[in-house]
Length: 379
Image (cartoon, rainbow, N blue to C red; front, side, top):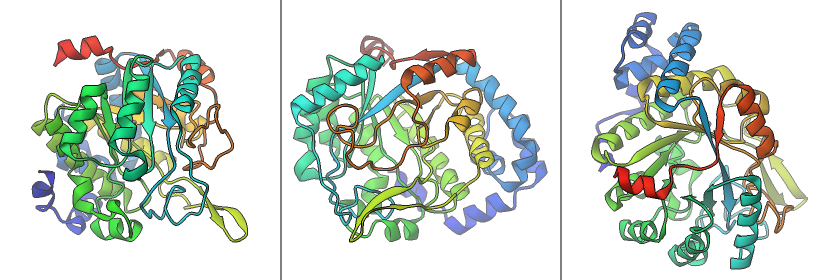
């Protein structure tokens, strides 16, 4: 399990490794074709700031070599905002007294039809973490409803046991996104005081259970802003490196979710809670390029959390997947557009508008992942 490797590392020691990296360390990392975790630490360090243009050029070149001039598009389909966890940064948190909503079969199909009308053939199913309401039977039913409508089904729900993942894979599940939120144990406990999610170890071993179940693709990421973003990113890279070596038949993707404002229902009504800026845009570009230089074949995804201007400028720098037209509330496309969102999005452009931006940049928008028949042949 990854925890055996993780226990060999100390947060403070890793932070010092990053903070004390020198220009020589950065230049050494940039000169290599195969890079180590120590090289990655140098590339995300403050010492790498003056080398951002070089990193961007190398990242662009590597991305085009591995993925061509394509950009995959996807959209989330929020099935429920029911949740039994308390998470300080999430509008679905149990202690936020919002009206809870779980889509019926008919409502799921109506939302799916709306996404299909936009051109999507790849859907990401999202729920809060409420096993009694949206557990394995509910998710299995949703996959059965949608598997003939979409070529690729991903999900981001509560962590499950290995047999449950195997059961869902048999129904047509292709990809699971499971973000550790933060690898800092103290910060993790601070931000997850109640619910099953409070178990740091159960969550961090979820990708192991997915790999053992034979999932096609695993998505990783840290929620940027809960702890030092550089140190969290190092541990994400450590986790990715371990998984690639251990479950080598599985593909991997990384996401870069920065904390966004959420709506909180209080005595005086709905109020917005803003977490401020955890990292600059230049630092996020640095992180994207560093991951590409460290792992040339990993998919890098950017959501509508980011601004239109930022997303337009990073298309060429290493990102391979974008969400577009996203709604982060159950029923947000057609069933109940006014229900409270999980977090505020920043890029509100339609999928057609995003596709036009991609084409103007000289890239081709792709509306689905690999076809299931190709996935069968490649495994």
